[in-house]
Length: 91
Image 1 (cartoon, helix red, strand yellow):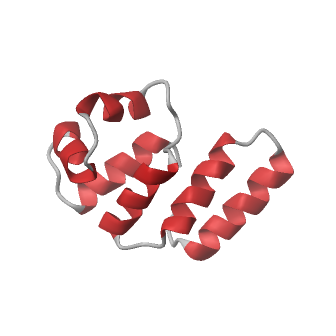
Image 2 (spheres, rainbow, N blue to C red):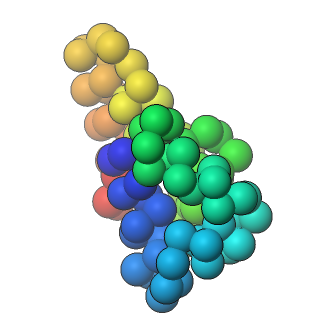
């Protein structure tokens, strides 16, 4: 999943009305959320962990999902995505 999809999932799950509310819940700036919607297509590990905790899922699943998004190798992407899916129900 792209970073913005994780943020959107957090917003829906926690009934957060805006990116500003999501930023507050994650203890990051509103501009950081904007960056995740724009040029930064993957979450860094700290924000991935915060989202996982708020969603009540294994942080490793989101971290692996984001590593899969970043990698250029199709074989590695597939392996990372499979492991993320094993650890995280909706990765």
